[in-house]
Image (cartoon, rainbow, N blue to C red; front, top):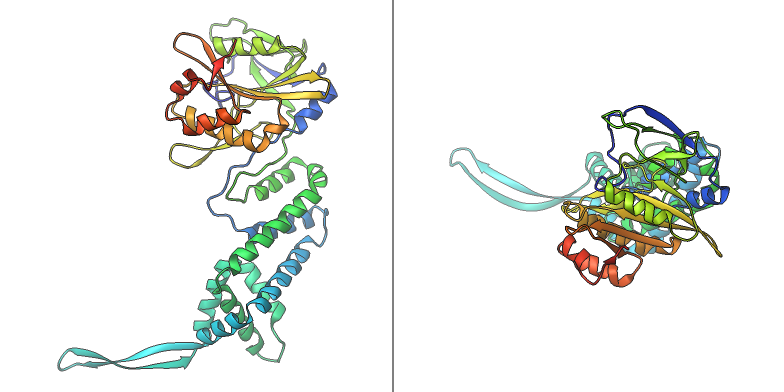
Length: 405
């Protein structure tokens, strides 16, 4: 709907807790468990920091007891390889760091004039090297830089071993391509562990699951996470005038009679729901929560200013077929709203990535003549039309859309 799955915070009238609907089959819930929500990307995401956080989490939860140590070992091996691969460039960078270039300036107090004398070079002192080492920490991450320095330092009874290590690391960080190589390997190992321990991570308590979701989200692109089953949802059963609101059966959450209130739906959203419930093979439906939460199917999109946001399509439908349970996204949303086109583009990007996991992904809008028009977002031709569109209403009125019924 116009609110993208609900109004967020609202005043509830005669609230009733909806519990898990006992009439919903296990196969429907299994299909729900496979839904792919997305995280909201971060503007600044450090792959090495993400790997370190994952290692710490896996160690704490006993999933991979030595994960943090293993992560450091992997990163050290990569840095060792980069040192060897760029040996000539590294030697040159070390030489540049150890030589501080300067110029003598001669000033005349009487004449108020200054002139530059001859240039000179000196061996860099500890402060100059530490400044370069600190800069390396911004490239590699302060934690990796510090730990790797301790790893390669040659014990010799004084600080020279650590000083030499700091010089080498500072030099390595100045070489073009090193950060990209390290980030790539850190991302690869993070993804490997997230895949390898996916089932174990799903088994940790909810508060710990949130930690892993946050680690997954430490990326500049939307990332797939697991959805959690809803446990309870509070809905109003009366309107502001004390009238009972209409209800529908078949929702994943329900009251004791197997019904779910639909008082928050407008007339045409209700029409969409009723139409979908009449489709062959219909089994169940889910009113997606309007704000991103553990039990919502959230989809990342960019708003008109290029900032990442999350949308929550209104409806998820479950139906049976010879191939098992089919899942569909149907999102009624006003074409006149300022976020209509950006959300359609987000839905199109989502369909490109995950369309094969859904039976249908559709956006519906009520036009000024009260007709409902639908965009089949699983269609590559429709997605192209969405990405080229400049006006949502014109898009729904074009050949890219069809009548909903």
